[in-house]
Amino acid sequence: MGTSEEAGAVTGVFDDSNVDEVWERKRNTPVNYFLAGRNSRTLPVALSFVVTFQSSLMILGFPAEGYAYGIGVAYCAVGSSVAYIFAALFIVPVFHPLKLTSVNEYFRLRYGNNVVRYMVLILGMIYSLFYMATVMVGTCVALDVVLGIPFWGTILIYSIVTTIYTSVGGIKAVIWTDVFQLLVMVTGMIVVLVKSTTGAGGVENVFEYAKDRFGSTDFRLDPTIRYQVWNTCFGTFGSFLYLTFLQPAMQRVYSTPTVQTARNMYFISTPFYCVFMLMASFEGVFIFAYFAAKQCDILGAGIVDNINAILPFAVLDLFQDLPGLAGLFTASLSSAALSTMSSCLSSLSAVTYEDIIKIKFPDLHANKATKLSKVIVLVYGLIAMGLAFAVALIPGSVLAIFVGFMGSFGGPTVATYLLSMMYRKATTKGVVIGTICGSAIGLWLNLGSTSSGLSSYPYLPSGPTEECSIYSVGPEFLNVSTATIHSVANNLTFFSVNKQMSTSTISAGGNVRNLSILETFYSISYLLFSLIGTVTSLIVGFLVSLCTSPPEKFDERCLFSFRKHILLELRGRKSSTNSNADNVNDIEEMVDFITTDVEN
Image (tube, rainbow, N blue to C red; front, side):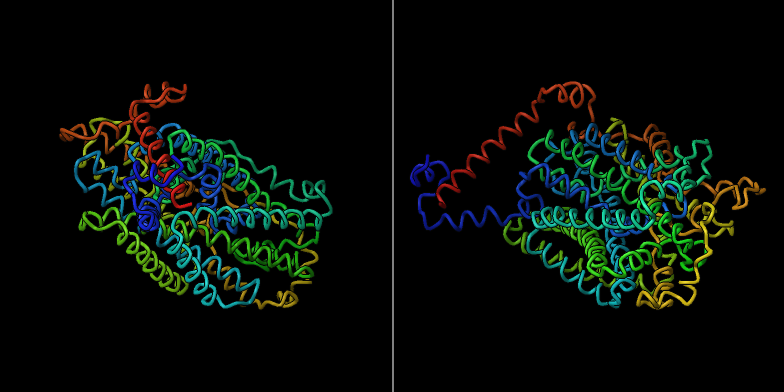
């Protein structure tokens, strides 16, 4: 089998001069470009998945929340872990054997039409484009503070660099750059944690200065508490489960060779994700202890008037004598932004090709399709860059509105997938009407909480402010103007979703407010918006499906089977579908080996 003649007998290639051409045609295909030949290694894909949804806005947002509200935000790690384990057990075994490129193709197989497919496609494209835009704006304005580079300059740089390497390298380039960027991001966070700890006088002092932040865990069953344990765990479950249905996540599932390797991707990435979120949450608490040790709570004293400017300000203070470490923080932010943007660009190109172009031009040659997909990446990169400039011109609440707005649609989208997978009699009308109703409820909550005029949710008690005179003239000693700090405050908003996004029935002084039923409804924690939308869509979708006719014929593989996908597969037994898929993979690997041997 090692000779070229024998290889030619197997592959049908007898002329060595044609081997390079055959190899190039095999490599330059949409499957290889979007899914890395469906043969990616588990560990790099798992790390890439972690970075994809750990954007620079999360790096800035979680520390800000930890500083102002305590470690309650860290319970998001519980909700995200449950969501990812749920995805590994119940979602992966249904979607992976379908061998799709775009996750939206599932709905054509499930319902025999493209109505639901295009509804979910549009929602996903809106999410990805505006997510990229907000990631760029948040990062670039923060870097304006740290480095003094105009945000429009960094927007141009990020857009151009990310678009080029994503267009040229496809999903392989995205995965391997994500792995490197993860290392940079984690290193930057560790440096901030260590420096703030030493600045506070050690770990014991950190726990002493920030004891109210560490003791902020609240187990009361009150949906209006911002980071009450149950709200945080259950609310973030729906939000993070939505991420597992998005194209960037499914693209990584489809790039692995078997169901088990795809499941392992989630099992490996979950602890990494938890550690990352916990580090970001505790980062804010440690920074609070650092400033408390200096007898100056920068938020309580009003030096920073928006919690989202805390981390950039702290970095300038922590590393004012160590500019190299401030640069590491910059690299960490940049890595987070680049990883998110590259994943979104790759996924947008994939769904555009599979759900739009391929339907219109089914006979398009694979080589031309790949080249066209690269051009599509460039187009979406330009669109995202234009949106970033547009977002930068809108007042800071636009980022808060974006997070709440997309949460309102994320929950109903989750319900659409779950109902389609778990309920055999689900209908097109049922899931569409259910999604519309769930989205309407989510938007009502979102708009009501921002426009009702209710007071903002109170911060935890401020730290000491006796020695804030060192900042009284503004942060000029940090080589940055007060106007720039306020620019960050007005443009950076992520997980806090703006102070007006979630309110409480208890004021800062501990007095209970007299709220009407509607005002109490608007005071529900923003973390529950997605979960409320999910439950509403499931109930409405189920009831409407009962009253309408289900599709007469559909692909049975689109349904989840507890016996097949859990009892059998988790015990190591393979279904016939997986066995056939594995046989095909074995044949493809043999051909790959032979072709490589011929080339050598």
